[in-house]
Image 1: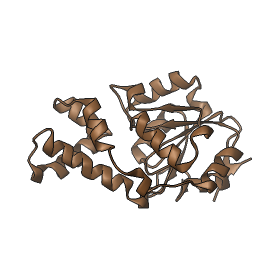
Image 2 (image 1 turned 135 degrees about the horizontal axis):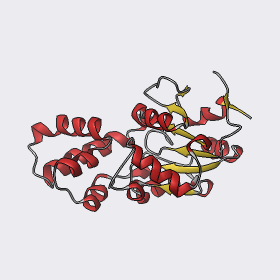
Image 3 (image 1 turned 30 degrees about the horizontal axis):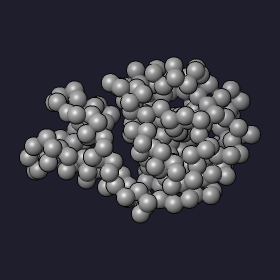
Amino acid sequence: MNALNLHYIRCLLIDLDDTLYPHTNGIWEMIRKRINSFMIEEMDFPAGEVPALRHRLWQQYGTTLRGLQAEYTVDMNAYLTYVHDIPLNKFLGPDQALAQMLRILPQRKIIFTNAPEAHARRVMDLLGVTDLFEMIVDIYAVTPHCKPEPEAFHKALALIGDSPEQCLLIDDSPGNLDAARMLGMATVSVGLHQHDGSPHIEHICELQDLIDM
């Protein structure tokens, strides 16, 4: 595994879902089912059409919500509350290895997520790492945009006050990593999908092994 030189990196921008915790634990599958249910029960889409429509909107716009906003009428607050109403405590608990790794790395640590802050804080609290992050840049902070839209990254950078060249994005989405690299950020891919041009790790705790201290 090649070392990553972070001499010029001041800020670690870390995705939340399927990045801060393993993609295998079932949370995102439950969120996906809640999205399908919202589209059927609250927006009256035919059940048989929803999975394909949700997938197309996610691929085309970065999130299903962004697609629904672009092509339909949707209440953003109602959507985000509904789809994140899941029993996270059944999936997550304190992660001492993650906390130790975050403490060792000297850079600023900021969550950058397409989820709402309330969901992010629930995840971070259950993992026991809330106090190790300086800030959460959530979907509301970059609205009406979202990752991987460049406008979302520009808004995030303005909020954190660092240049792209000073930031490392750690994310599970190749599209998000593409957008970050186009802006000049360093990138690391995590989890299921590898990304051309980014070092890849299976679990975020392997990040420490990548970094040339």
